[in-house]
Length: 135
Image (tube, rainbow, N blue to C red; front, side, top):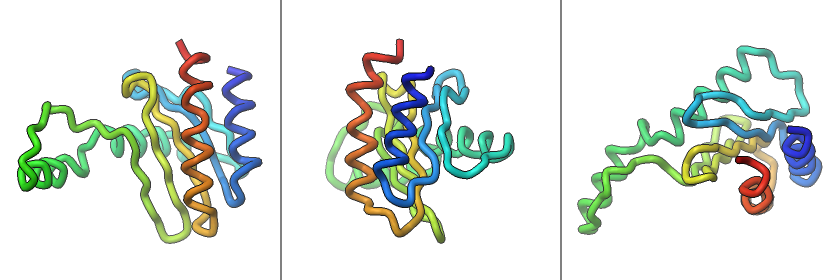
């Protein structure tokens, strides 16, 4: 886990305004790593895990996804899990991406003054490294 902690810390160092970077086991619903600049209370950690699992499971957007697919004649395979999501809040951006065939979720939380393109680029750059580290 030291390697993962180091990798998450590097992302926070590279992305201006980054607040937290971490990994969640989406199947076990367990936090693997969360490196953050501000102190995260246990309640905040639970909120991050729960929110990420909820977002990436597609529970919020599955109806929209199915409506769009139907409109364009795309046949759904019944899988509504998402691969990437970006959510904008009043003062924050939340970037989520799945790896390991949807088993692991990466999360990067930044302030709204962060460069969105750089944040996505850094998050996506973690994928090949983490794919080899995480069993």
